[in-house]
Length: 127
Image 1 (cartoon, rainbow, N blue to C red):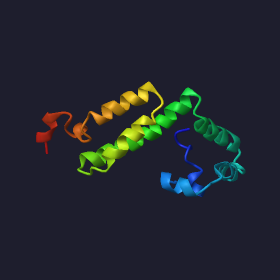
Image 2 (image 1 turned 135 degrees about the horizontal axis):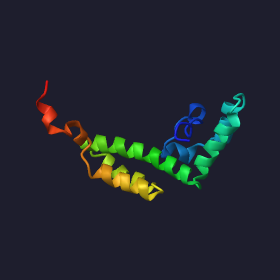
Image 3 (image 1 turned 180 degrees about the vertical axis):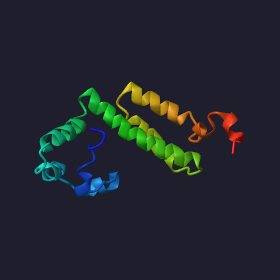
């Protein structure tokens, strides 16, 4: 589900929130076109439908993983000195659907993006 949920974007693009205000896309048609000749096409389409329905735990976790990837990207930009992501982060974190996702987001936001780099400070003196 995590690997294929954005598959339709190969046909319809990755529309941002402004574009979505003005454009109507037929994601179902794009998915049908993409999967019609695959022997496992129905399984792919069913997984995308499950993701979009966001009812199963797996779909909720996959959704949160997608949002956490954006949280990580925005946090790294913010830590590098770009203040723009500060306005976006609360909205993205607000989209998280599971307590596990919310907990991970809190840890991400409370940790410097490059903290892992010198996790073992003794290594910093080695060539």
